[in-house]
Amino acid sequence: MIEYSAAADYIEAVYDHKDYFGGGQLEEDIYNGREDINGQEADLHRNGFELTEMKVSGLDNWTDIEQIRSKYLPQLENKLREKIDGIEHIIFWHPMYRGEGMDRSSNSAPLASSVHLDADIAAFELEELVELVTERSISPQENTSVIVRDALLSKNRFMIVNAWRNINDEPIMRAPLGLFLPNYTEPNQTYPWARLDVISSRWYTFPFMSSEEVLMFKQYDRRLDNPSDIWHCALRLMEEGGEEANPRKSLDLRAFCILNEEVPERLDRWRLRDPPLVAPHQSTKKSRPFVRSFLSNVKRILPFVRGKNSD
Image 1 (cartoon, rainbow, N blue to C red):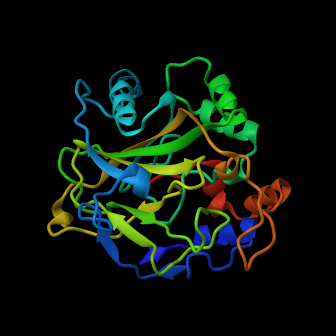
Image 2 (cartoon, one colour):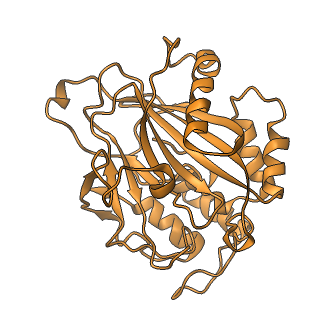
């Protein structure tokens, strides 16, 4: 059973899309992402997500933020540059540890079984997004706010990639991460303006993820014609023998990637944040005061705009 209710309530309240996912709780088929997706392996650019090998050397404590900074970030940056051509800057932000029974804090939380995005970028004004990234940055750059602001004011393409990994020694046997690959009813459209084609959209997971793999999935891409906005959640699944396995523990880290590529005006999502919704819905996004008022009354969907959610 996939829990869409909170996300669907948020989308209806802010963007006037009613019944966005086709229901609040639905039984869905879950496909194996390690197998072919439309005849090809999962690819970050073609599908919005990709599993890749990444053995991390020199790190012996995943909960030590200084080791994350000094050991993990340089290796993760190399992997991102390998997968994404033309990166000028990468700012890493908001590390989040998740696990069964884990206490909630500024950088840890229990599993998130409700469908969500890490942040609804379409709901942010420029300075709000600058603040979101820079306040939680763990990158070594001292001028992160200048770098992010300049990217938003320019025509440079940027994307937000979540790097999600298993930090247990053994493969994940229960509560794996599920990724929703959306298809839309209109070409060159995306969330939040386009309507989902709920028939052709699919859920994927990568069974038995090891500690030597990283799952990269896009949460935003400035180019309208590239897949991103990958909804996700912890799935209520268990492999055979999972009851005896250690509880799942994961780390996800967001990367704000700025490319040396200009986005054509007609494909620039960032500058087109308030277009009319695709028919039959013709109203525009609700005003910021409405969003704040709505969020103050519905606390359970706060993460979708303020960027506090993770898996």
